[in-house]
Image 1: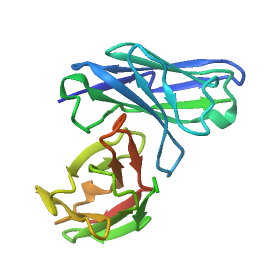
Image 2 (image 1 turned 120 degrees about the vertical axis):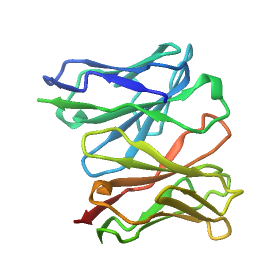
Image 3 (image 1 turned 90 degrees about the vertical axis):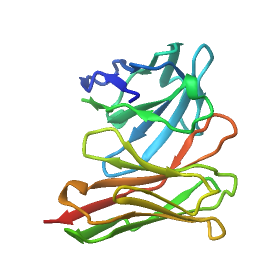
Image 4 (image 1 turned 90 degrees about the horizontal axis):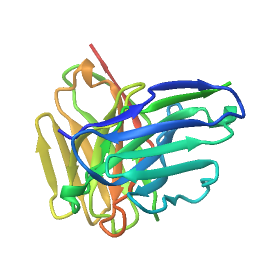
Length: 118
Length: 113
């Protein structure tokens, strides 16, 4: 089956620093990757849609200068939280759609990254 | 119009019982409805999905019932087991654009042994 990995799985950083989260499709090429944020006991909130080779599309209310997304290849997308603050602490999850089944709706989800900003 | 409403928020079921979770949507352009299972600290995993041209789909102990006219769909877990204890999310997607998902609010299921 299609596998998506995220690195790191957990990260603790100090307030004011930036942190990068990687999302990789391991056995398929992803035309589109999605980044979600999930607060404890809450649903997944879509932050942005990332297409390979083009700028990400951010959802309303998501600061694009705060959450930098780069989709440099068909297997890698990165989310950088810039100047992180405690309120950015959350569970960040990525998902990807398979390029070869471009008409398929299915998204393959990564295991998530727990970010804690102290 | 982009919301997907999910109920109940939490559910407790005895082992062997049937768990039923419901979702409702407004946007008639949605054309794909998946259900995801999520364990604490993990990413969601696809359980089963349905398209609006089908009223029911069954995979093992999991069944989706879909009512297009009422704009509702539900997940039935037959013979619920303690290992099914998790949070379940419904979602809806559009084929136009990026196929992004709109998730429901989630249901925390606990199956008692």
